[in-house]
Image 1 (cartoon, rainbow, N blue to C red):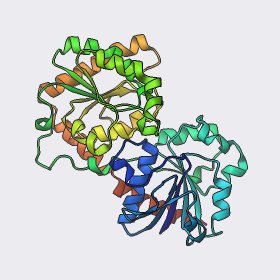
Image 2 (image 1 turned 45 degrees about the horizontal axis):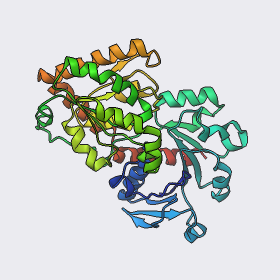
Image 3 (image 1 turned 45 degrees about the vertical axis):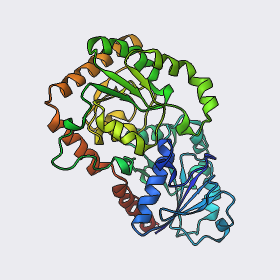
Image 4 (image 1 turned 30 degrees about the vertical axis):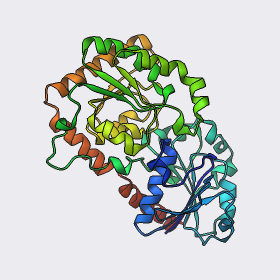
Length: 372
């Protein structure tokens, strides 16, 4: 197949970028999927604000101003990433009866990026709408009168470097830090304040516990000075809290060994996640997961996480979250969690890998073509 993916965020990136710097889930997912498709022999183009156009990892990376945009072959699909609003432009570029136009978004339906779907003319431009969870798809059907036959759940997956972190006979527990290690790996505004409220009590109950925070706005292409302006107080508080180490966001190849040694992904999520690649990767890394019963998190964690309800009620939520983290630490410490962690890691490697996603995308696009 010939496939083109369009990202309109204005970020300077290509398919190699997640290997060297932190990236948001939608854009990193684009990179991983495009590379997986190219590895399987498909002709794949990405159009971003890259300043280094060329062929990378088998993918043709173009910028918005690349002259090659006027000389492209006929595509089987044009896929808009995250943001609606380019439907009519893509439809005009599509060959009638051949090229399918698709919107692939991980945003909730109330996000500004997709409000143009209120316009019937914009909705009608798309042959397909790809969502990252069934929960998200249901929300879109409540907000917009979408044709259900044109919607499809195309889940996210883990970074390739997170795949098969444990050999078949390797002990997961043996890879863990000698002392209880917690990790927070999401954006600062998604739950870090809650975690910093909760950790002193966790540390009091488990004095040897340590928390490492891998968080910043770098994943959203935000300059360091702006990130500091918005979050300096959070980072300072983290560094001043006993047992806490703030390390900032890391690219996935650097984050992987930290997750492999971590005991618990401590994520008191207050943000409505539609999927959550961090949770998927923690599953693959053999971490216990304690997070919120919100959005697509129950679906993503597939029964393997402790889900704490009601994050909006801080007074009730925090004690339950603390209890959940302490219990998870206890399960690891008792050395009785090996079988469950192996099952969880195997589930992630069986279901949350981009090679499988590439096959699913090809099959879906082929079905759209057959439907006419």
